[in-house]
Image 1 (cartoon, rainbow, N blue to C red):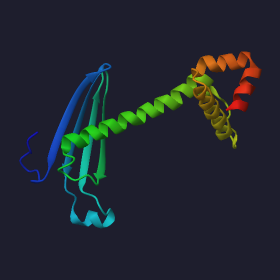
Image 2: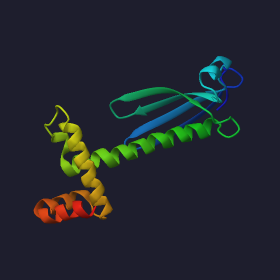
Image 3: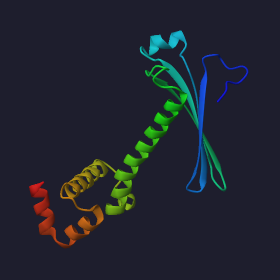
Image 4: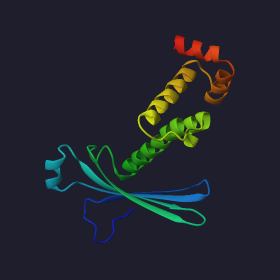
Length: 163
């Protein structure tokens, strides 16, 4: 993408546009070398970035702007590569989010739990996480395994003992 008329000479840009899941997502990045004073605050910083994400749906539009710093030098990480890295990081975050929270809510109806005070919510979260870890270690699927253990408590106790 060419530089705009009043852009600093070291500014580099990249943009991607994707259409999927009923929306158009545009990502833009502007990258340049940091000002000298920034290096005193963050030693090793090599580039600063402004990343903009625009999501256009049928009835609404969302815009998000974030700023980032990186120790990756310009020859190793140009604007397009940094945009790809930012996109991959965001997707990895949601994969973790979906794997943990959606599974816990679908398996244990965590969102419907009325326990909200004291140490009980944290204790229940640890119990649910432990149960999921045991089920995964056994190679089972979370929801069917929970239902099987609910029907056969001896098997559940045995799974905890052997875990």
